[in-house]
Image (cartoon, rainbow, N blue to C red):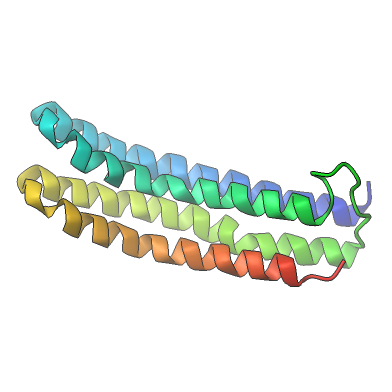
Length: 157
């Protein structure tokens, strides 16, 4: 396997790994808060479940980028393209927006979701407002996903 291929695959792997780590930490942070609320008032389970789940999307975005990358370089079809080192670095770099922002935004989205869950604990009718606050953090993960997609697709092989 050429160095270019190793670099490209490493970028895709980092997108999955870092997005996944961020999602695990974000969902766990929100989950701790959600468990406390549901222990006190089981009827609020539906309101806090979505808030807890939101930080998990960054892991999905990282996986999506890895699939797009694998499709581009032929790993899914069984006939991988031999990449130059320059192409490998380009693809590696194209994976970094979602890898880095996926990690960070999921962690901070979990903290925001945790605060929103605390709002729901005090006033059950604030779930929509808390959801809006939590989704605002998601915006930057979506922008990073879009940047990674556009960069991967823009690289000539």
